[in-house]
Amino acid sequence: MQRRITELRDSGVLYCDIDTDRARLGLAIRTQLWLTVPPTEPAATGLAPARHDEVAFAAAITGTRNLYASVSTPSVRGFYEYLTNTVSGLPAVQSVESSLVLPTVKGPAGMRSPGTDH
Image 1 (cartoon, rainbow, N blue to C red):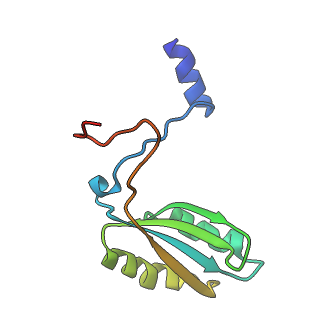
Image 2: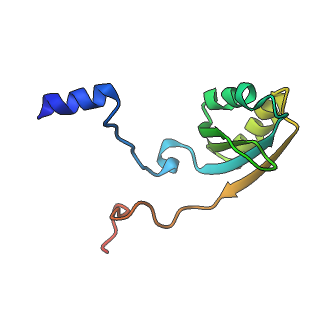
Image 3: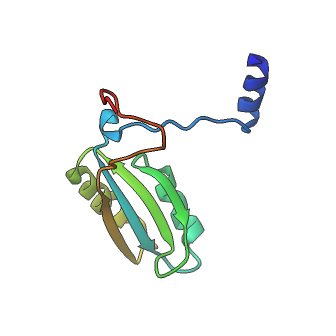
C-alpha cells in the first residue's frame, strides 16, 4: 500500500494541502490584491507576483481588474512595504486595489482549533 501511495504522490495524482494558522508561521496579515494591467500584459506581469514569497496564490481574472493575488505578510507595515516597494515596481501595473482579510472564524469542516472542547 505504501508503494502505491508513493507512486500516486510522485505522479502528482495525490497531494496534501495543509491548513494552518498563518500567524504561527509569522504571517499574521492576509490581504487580497486586484491589479489592472493592459490586456496584453496579464501573463507577463502575473508571473512576477507568483514568484514573490509574500504571494500564496496569483491568477489572471476577468472584469475591471485582470490580476488577483493573495498576499500574506508578518504585519500591516510588511504589507505596506510589499505594496510600495515591490508591487509598485511592476512596470505594467496601472492600478491596484487591496482588501484586508479578517481573521477566519471557522476553517474546513470537521477541523477544530487546538484546545477547544466542542
